[in-house]
Length: 136
Image (cartoon, rainbow, N blue to C red; front, side, top):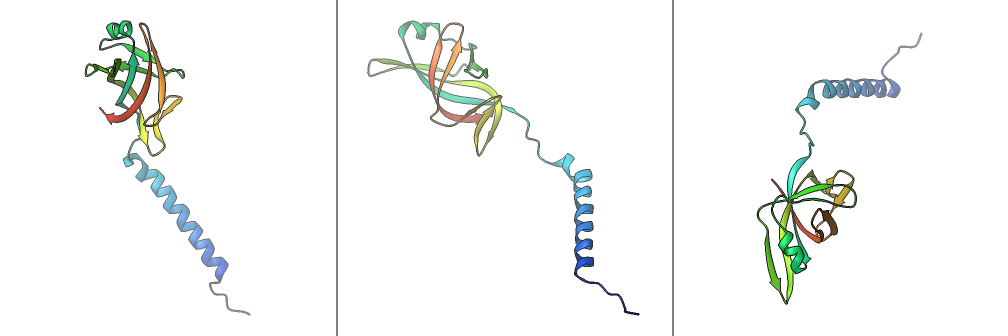
């Protein structure tokens, strides 16, 4: 009779069984301590040209929505400047979302720096250019 020893198939099966055991252990004990990717509030900085009538309608706390339904609230730290005879609003919208390497994700929308987005509110519509995303 032939003496049996470990061959390549046996070694491969042992490696697969060990990998499965490690995966089960990681799933059972390691994942609860993993970093959560929960959405957070961000200050989305922007600037938008305004007419004189729109400039008078601007105040902190105005709620806006984009075309995909993402909601944001105008924060108190806004200012209105007149540059070359044009009125421009500089401000921040508070929006809940996630910032990652593929942009700022919030609901169905994804934003990048220098994107132009139309935010519509009760009193006015902003044709905004996004400049930055800062975690609140």
